[in-house]
Length: 195
Picture 1 (cartoon, rainbow, N blue to C red):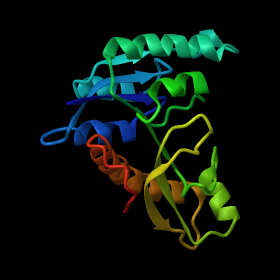
Picture 2 (cartoon, rainbow, N blue to C red):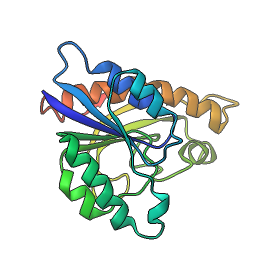
Picture 3 (cartoon, rainbow, N blue to C red):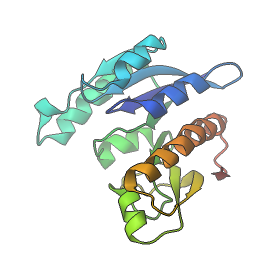
Picture 4 (cartoon, rainbow, N blue to C red):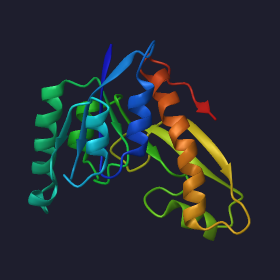
């Protein structure tokens, strides 16, 4: 049985879907939900689902990403995860951290990568006049939002869409895509999944 640690920064809606999916014949179970702020709403939700939680606050490490990551690693190693899932974790991780989990770290991004790496993806899709948007699950590498794509889900851009209405529709697809990709990934299946 694979052990999965999920890193969050906010409400944790993707984390909840991942945790809820890891039951029955799933080859993984959640071992930790870790947030970079005690204010992250997802912590209480994870605890209510019976998953151990931890906080490594990034603020005392201001300007020293390596010391923040060292503390993150200390907590992670104590829980011995096989796989790391980034689920709205809003801190950039450096190569020295990522390399320790190479081939074992996933992220979900709210665009159809390689389009719109980084932030404000929905607004950028609207400004570009795109007819579709979506989300991507990818392996994490040292380059931001750049690792091998494992899954994508598409949604149409509708007339009158705002960044918020588009984001809400994409989020529904994220909730379906991330658990589906994780379930395959833990068995060694890295083939592209399209929803």
